[in-house]
Amino acid sequence: MPSSLFFRHRDAALTRAIAGIPCTSRTSFLPLLLAAFVCASTLVLGESAQGQSTTPQNQTTSPPAAKQTYFPNIPTGINDEGVVVGDNSVFYKDGPVGLVGPLGQGINTLLAAVNNRGQVLLAQNFGGLRYFICNPVPRECSPVGLVGQLNEGGAPKSIYVLYLTGLDDTGRVFGAYDSGHGLCGVVGLPTLGKPGDQGPPPLAPAVYTLVGCPGSGNLLIRAMNANGQITGSVNGQAFLWSNGQLTLLSFPGLEFTMGNAINEAGVVAGLFWVRNATSDDGTVSSSPVPASSQPQKSFVYDGSKFRLLLMPRGIWTYVTGINNRGQVVGFYDDGMFTTSGAYVDTSGDNHRGFIANIEKFPVAHVGATPIQGSIGEAPKSAPTNVPQN
Image (cartoon, rainbow, N blue to C red):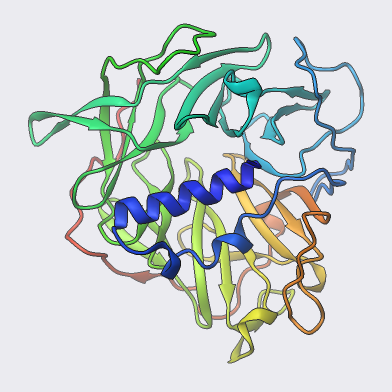
């Protein structure tokens, strides 16, 4: 299963299992949003260097000594040092180091995040969703237990973490569990197995701290930070959960938005799809056009304004990560739409990864005002700042 299908099946399964509603009515965008992982050439935006993307077939024990710039076709995360993960490799300035899951010869591997210590949060779908914290050099992966204990209302509560979204510099993981009233975000030092262990994940419970419970309904948590902020999507709209307040990220002509990543400053990076035409300078037209003629685009939101990542010729984009230096990573496909707006299956031949500085994005000119709202039950309170270790 390609990593994109892993993304798609994870999101679809979580939507069905947690929201308790039919998948078909809520995941129609996913086939377009989560395209196949493939080999393609690479474009680096906002940087002076442009290089070749390669994924080593054999594991290496140290970053290659080549002096060429390397970048993945489908990047999935970036740390503050500019180390990028994607394409089953960790991309350093000197070159990539291959990294796959320890099970089943590495099939169905996704590198979900990289922290500033160089540790990688690795997900592998092999007889169920498994997680590992890995050191790429030398390659060493420890299985992550998903059983936890949470202090809720003064009483300990046993939880099972459904999936993980991130890894901080102290080794804590961010994840989500089902509270029975919706998804809640948690953070904590996980229970780890021995490096190289391929058996079942450890069952000893780890102690987690509540980050927040944005609400119930068709809600998916996709990223969190150490300041108690959460982003994701709910009922087809991106949200920012901060200080106990849910903000829906929306603007006129909207079809769909989703928050994919958030940094420590609370800047959200995500996707949007509009009915109305959007120009390259960020102007959103007041006149609707056929939805299929408007390719998916990406945005960043800093709490007061949207910036839109708009490729020339209306190219389709997907932002996947953001760091604390204001850099985002993602990928684009310039062959998914014809001039008439019809969808074209390019079999992934036009995917290219990119890195960009958010200051280079144009500010949206129309309707870039978040809508305050709440979804489902009243959200539970959570600390403004998640305790640091």
